Picture 1 (spheres, rainbow, N blue to C red):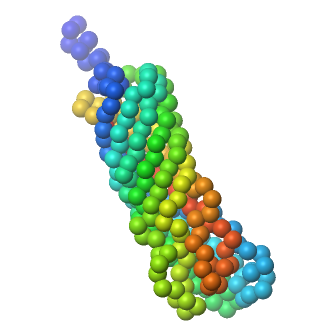
Picture 2 (picture 1 turned 180 degrees about the vertical axis):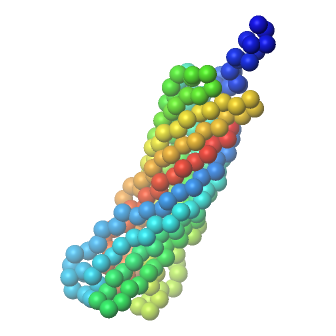
Picture 3 (picture 1 turned 120 degrees about the horizontal axis):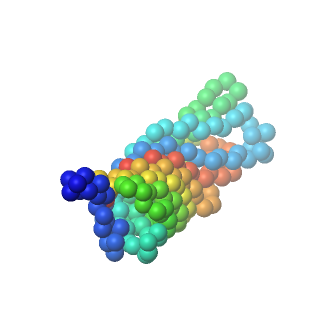
Length: 215
């Protein structure tokens, strides 16, 4: 009887009573961009279409979690380093040009986390909050020209993120798979005088991120 009762005990029963705890996250992502073209430019040049090709990326970061109450936490996700690539594809009358937009983001997010009731060793949650990003890979200062096309994003952007996840309690740690979307406030396009940038009205970077948290 004692043996069965011991086996029935949940893992880390006092874990959520901690005021603060730490962890790290491993992430994969798909970098996207919502792109709007300038109709006047598209109608007066040989350019016929501008499209986006997305690629998978990776990320690694730190977690600091502050307990607010039974079901509420504040989570500081910082720093989180993410490597992202998107290609802008320009279709002309008789040719095509691809411009790579590569980013190495250092992100900081302050999230509100709402948790469901714990069921044995699992509980679901949602997160939402603001996000700050600095792009160490920004090409804003790179030399560019008609024969050397460069499309750059501003290195500093602000946005928001929201996601859902599941806390799974093991004997010695908590594991949390999570999926979230990250959106940018305002256009991040760095404008120059060359046609590859002038054809674009605005660019809004987006990220779909699947994370594995260990705390």
